[in-house]
Image (cartoon, rainbow, N blue to C red):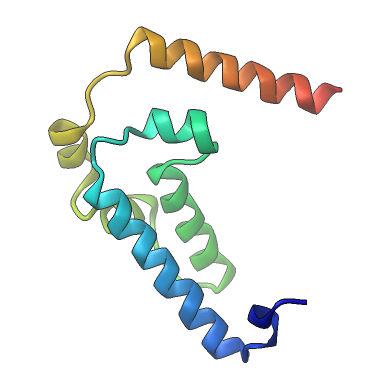
Length: 110
């Protein structure tokens, strides 16, 4: 059991929220890290974070749609962020993504 487990629920939630905000800031500070690279390496990206926020809101009967969540995660409308910071995936990135995806699929089967 870790010291983190001993924290009261409110403090734990505050720390988790602060870490999440720091993650968003880190991603914003590193716009050169592309979503496809995050997906290849960590199996999540900024869009996943947006979907997780929507899911968390729904679990609490709160209203938050995907585009609103993406604007929060990206710090601007997604269409604007994509135009400014997201070049098309390279053939190398797509090959790495396909290999990653195939490896995950094989692991589920076996």
